[in-house]
Length: 307
Image (cartoon, rainbow, N blue to C red):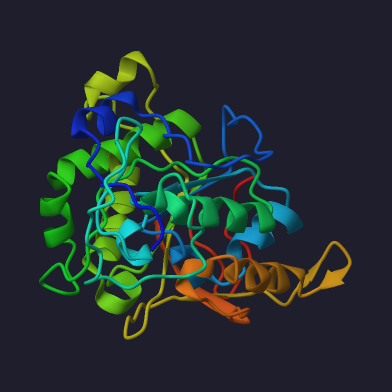
């Protein structure tokens, strides 16, 4: 039996008041310093949620040299078999009974904080896909089987309210000033309430981040900023009047299909989830908000009209 730590929740005040990322446990990496201004911000709920976007991340990070900031609201700790959090003040507790939860043998037995192991996986994935900065991990608590399925309400309630989550995303938009914000399908892709809450928080935050009358307490540190465009992934069963289908098999710096190849290779780095080396050839997105006019239907560029 691997050594385990009893895992405790981080105080909500620490998560929200600092508006900074919390260091990824056990990670030694070559990430760069965060940019003063990003080109794109991606907002998801869990490590591995980026897989629903196909080759979007390497396409823009590698093929187009865009500065991408990746926000992941939870650490996905439920998904590695340990349902709670750890922090630096924890002491070993070898009596912890995890027999009711699945074990993943690929998680190292000497992992300092096994609850945060998926953060390390995500860091490796993003580096493979060309993202140059560490993911933002506020560590909202991950939880399975929230109900009702398909609605963000249960996730917002569990995380302390919609305003709390939206406020965090607003702070990151104001901090990094992205031109484009991308998030998950409105229906959460598979109905997961935390997926749906990530999507809704990205949409609502993008609507108000440019309004200095909203979340005024942030303005001593960040200035108001309005993203120029907001895109959502189109999930199964969703229908929109105009959907933009983006191919990941396009030539990328002389290498045909490079974005798709990088995304597929990155997928398998989510070892605890036993993900396969695969990537969709194209992915659909809907332009939900735009301050720079509409896109041309099927135009393969989320930065259209932004120069």
